[in-house]
Image 1 (cartoon, one colour):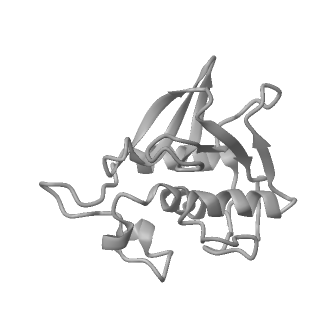
Image 2 (tube, one colour):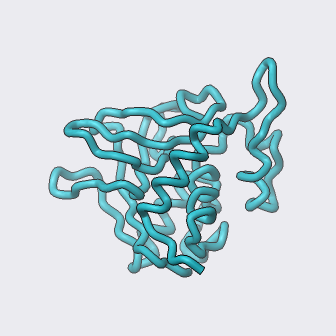
Length: 173
């Protein structure tokens, strides 16, 4: 089996975001079942408009990273929630967790957690970095703009970025 890498994660995230995945839309049934099936306590209806973190998990699994959907480090929720990703990264010393600071340089395959993007709350959105361009990042995200669709989007590196997570290549829980 090929080793999981952040570069592979970025490639898969771009491909999956551009499909695109979508929850229930006025003219379409949801197609997020492949993402949601990793979370046994969840169903497509409950996940509708709340699946950005599950999209990140799905891409990690597709890239070959071996991570349970609810690692021991997750206290408040599974990796279907942005807060779960933060707890996981902070609690597992093999994973790099970087609060937004000017000394850390994000790279493709890093995970970015945002504050106050959709619900004016901490860690309310998440994505996978595809490219860094000066003062912006190009990111693959699920449920972008809270419109229930995945896509590749360019975002400014600003106060909305809470933290970056860097999973090491070959990571196995």
